[in-house]
Image 1 (cartoon, helix red, strand yellow):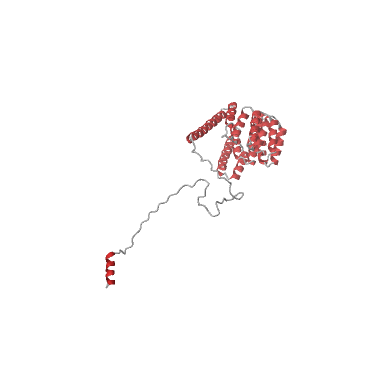
Image 2: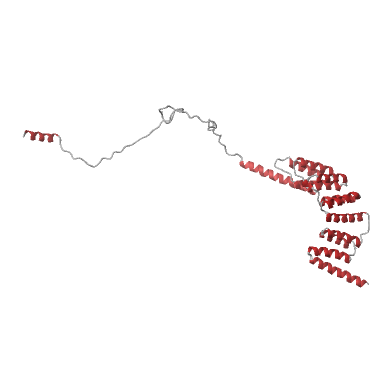
Length: 326
């Protein structure tokens, strides 16, 4: 009985409370902050072995990293582009001035303009320009100035060609300097890429005929035959005979022109053959059956049937007119 009463008093002392079984949610707010480490300290914190420095092998790491300075923006781009366009326009203007001086045969002014162009770092003279100037100097009776220009071209490492050498040779021939022209020929024969061609020989033959150096003409024909220009040699030999006939006032009759036409046909130069035939008629030298036979045979080899028909019709008219005259 006494025990029961004590238990009642205990319950009175601690009142009963209702326990909530739902779990309480706890909210945690985490805030992080950092402090910059002073220079020279290990950011990873202290380690048991202390700070270790890496020893780079030779050639593995250059040591200090050096940052290249940042390239700034290009200034005045428009000005540079404008200057470039102005330079191009200047070159075009001066080049046109050079062509104008050459056309007007003003050789001194042409050389001055050409020298002005060569002084510009962006201008590189071409072989065609040298060719025009060499021909100009030859026409203006300036062969030695042409030789000087040619030597300047070689000094500037511009590759010579057989055409450029022939232009220099022609400048001597225009001024009847036969020995100097043959010296150029000998120089050409020593250079594999500048061998003389048919035009080179024909230029020399013409000046030799004009100067009555017939012994040189024969040697040139022989040299042409050795170099494989046999047909061309025959042609030029006959052409030079025509020139000589004019010079010595030899009468140009039908037989004479037939010989020239035959040479043109053997050289397969039909353009020159037609030119000689036209000259023959302009000189009022009547063609005969031999004339037409030579030309018809030349046209037949080339398959030019229309030309053959025209000649046959012309030949029939010649025969008809001769019968009427009888």
